[in-house]
Image 1 (cartoon, rainbow, N blue to C red):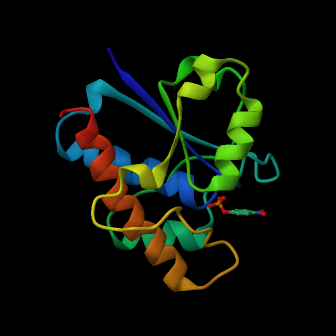
Image 2 (cartoon, rainbow, N blue to C red; image 1 turned 60 degrees about the vertical axis):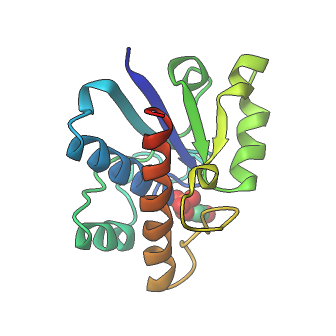
Length: 155
Ligand code: 4NP
């Protein structure tokens, strides 16, 4: 049975495409690709159809990640299709809870930093309006939390 995980941020062009790329690489490196389905989506539709933000693609590529996803908005079907729906900050979590129709849907919602191992952040900060340090911080936090997330399935 495949574990199906959807990463969600506001625009689906910075944080959640990076989470998708980092998680896919960690899964591949451990030879576990057959066990997982990984996708990402955004709360907003304004960037629908766009590649990930070029700054995020560049920062990710320097660490060996290919952020290839195309932005799309979260849809109600996602709450049936995925086992876990993981938001990047409190506002994403509030918006996901507003979309969820049932208690089962709501039970699938998590916050990315719940899986952090070495960092103590309460959320993954939005890098969109900031500089390069913000993109590097996002990748640091996501690498750590994706490791924790992957480990959570094999405890
Ligand atoms: P993301 O970053 O949620 O990490 O993809 C953002 C991208 C775009 C916008 C906000 C955040 N925006 O307002 O267009």
